[in-house]
Length: 434
Image: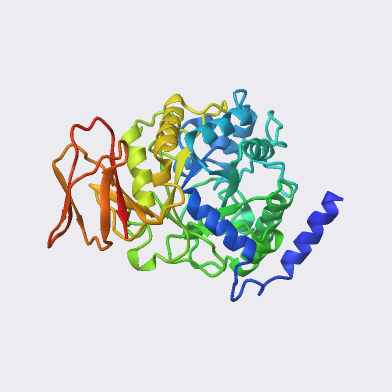
């Protein structure tokens, strides 16, 4: 029966070319967008056979592997320490409301029991367990929603050829075998599996458009298929551009909305009105890198979370589990540190709005009803000046002890005298506004 349902849905997808034109989100989709905006914090998980080499998720491209060489990796992928329940509990304790898991990265390896590719966790590794299934079920037990990262580009399939901007040095691909229609259908078949075999999925996170930016990715067909299978499912695409029709949220890689400090990001004039999400790493790389020495401390990840909220955006904070299935201690520590902080101060982050005052290196503001929360990143100073502050104030108090704080309106903005002494990462002030 499952196979009949699957092939029926594939047939539907083949006949829905124009269904996403003039996209109008469903009521279920709008409800899910509201949940997404309220959640403010999720965990990104980059994990696949590339972790065996301990050199990040781009190792196949960066080291110019041959296909036959790289396809030895699944034989070594046996994550004996993987425990989906422990992972899900960690995510719950971190204060995250959802995860985004790399179901398939650029190397083309699928982390579920795909029926349209034997190059997957069940058929190609001695582990022979469906990681996606176990993780989805465990997260549901903890009340964590699930989204899937899915790579548009593929360094292993011949039908993806000719190569785009990446993968040019990978040995063993047959450049005469490119078949774009076949590749698009393959992706639709896999997305159908992910959206029919694992219950409610709350988002699809695409990546790789930038590899072939001029290609006809047939987003009308792909986005329509997703919204037909699961109307509430949110679609985002990491193309670093203004959103395309049919997308439900906008993401920003290693950057805050509109800043584009990376040089490849989204410019300020391309930031739209859809729900927003910034993604970044605890480490330097996304996937496991055994030599990664760019480990962020608690204040760095907390500042990222608070600034993202100040822009009215979620933070999707990445971890890169080791090949044995264990999440490194320092990454667990950062997540648990955030969880401890959010248990006390989550009111100032969850279900808040931002963007009414642009965050700086000194502060970020969030709002909930008639309360505004000012997060001061350097509390050991006498005063802070909030420029361009418009709302009329009734009172300002210290969030921790509710004691009033003195302030004054000047020609430059709102000047606040900070309480002393402060022995915290941040100082949070509560403004009651009219």
